[in-house]
Amino acid sequence: GGGGGGGGGGGGSGGGGGSGEQHDGPTLRERVEMLSRAKGCLSEGIEPSAARLMHEVQEKLDVANIQLQIYTAIEQLLDEPRDGGVDGERAQRRQRRDAACRRALLELDFELYNVSELFNRYAKRLRLWEAQLAVLHCAGHNDTTLVRTVWANIIARHRRRNGAAANTVVFSL
Image: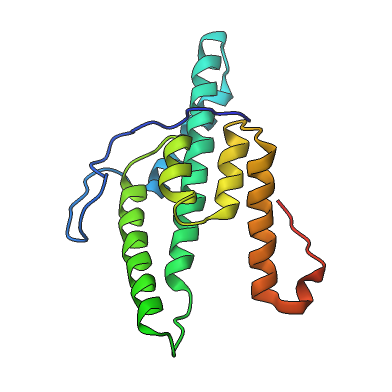
């Protein structure tokens, strides 16, 4: 499906800030659930007037699911084991990345973003290769050079993590 713009700034008070910031709106997972329910309600008795709304809800749901994929990938980055003998510079880079990840989780949890924002602010900046592919697919973006670059990074990361056993790479989407 091609939801080019998708879920613009939908409510919540999110956007940034420190860990002590209060948020009144629904979380990302709650928003995805609400959009899923809305889609279900609309699909029960589709009338011509509801078809356009159904399409809009589906686009927002597609983008919200990508945002949830990014959120989950960032959580996994924070859960990666720490290297015990890391030198000072690498440790500082890791601390900066972790701080950026925690800020990103706060932002992503309380505001829905469009695909362009998801790609540029999160997937690209944090090198979330699978999320980049999902955004490109959702947006109907057909830049083969970019897609090849993303795939090359996915394969290279897989080989780094799996060593010599990674000569045969199988991915399922």
